[in-house]
Length: 274
Image 1 (cartoon, helix red, strand yellow):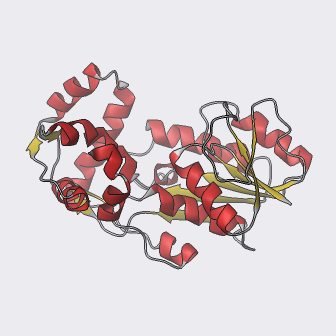
Image 2: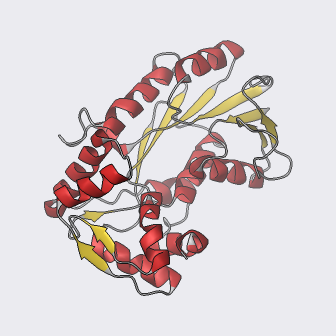
């Protein structure tokens, strides 16, 4: 049987595919440009009009911006028996800041696209991705200081490879039906400590300047970042000054290895950052 991976060329999807291939699984990956994916040898890549579900029994559901309802409806009708859904820790609604946020609204809808159509689901809810820190790549490369608000707020950034390996572990094992797994990185670090961890990973000194939330809004408007995303980020960073992100053990519990540190992530992304 075959495992279908949607969003296979994204940051998480690539790691899902790689881990499944390493486990000896047959993998079918979706891509808008199937001729140019860079996925491992042996992976069957299909475009939007390809035969997605032939011989597929398990599926990784990426939170696409559109079309997930129809995709899952077709998968259930075709006999797919297990769905692993990539969501977000915000979808749990544990904090007032999450309710109504852009991430909460989108990922709750993705979860419901699956849970209202089948009982054979498992939800993976990572917290903040370390990849969000790629927004610092330009100043790091150019030697300019990083400009950031709330430098004493603390988050637990997670490496996208850990999320991919968790999803692959669930797809290739029995159980997990109806389970929801919150995931974070192994350490809750202030944003100043995050800069230091990246500097250690790439072997380069990085300067940090604290700016006000209004200055951050102005910077983001110049980059055309939507206001609701800026609001969500500022609310998150503001809240985690007094109450740092709580570290969750899901990566170690599901993969058998400790979650990768932020310094590990920086080493893996050295080419992006230097």
